Length: 112
Image 1: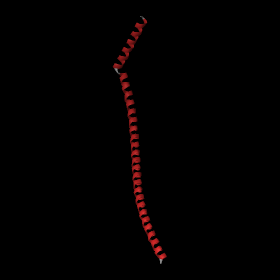
Image 2: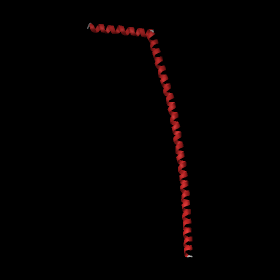
Image 3: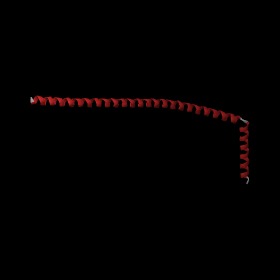
Image 4: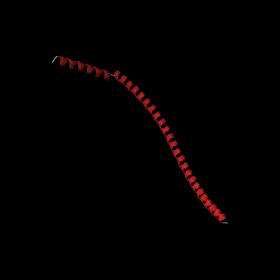
């Protein structure tokens, strides 16, 4: 009878240990589930940031293209303005005066 009582006590202890183990397993599963959820949230945040960076890079490329186009247009307009200015009377008169003044100064210096 003693061995039966001892066996019964051992079974009860084992049941207690088993219950405690099951409780620990449940807590670990809950912790793992919470960690998985945090990881999924982190992955979602990273994916959103990657998409945001791609969108930003696309906008930068578009702006760079626009800037290049504007520079090209500015260069053309400047060249057109220079050509118009060169055909103007003001330009011809100014260049003529500079030429005359330059010759006069050279003449004066050579005769000093």
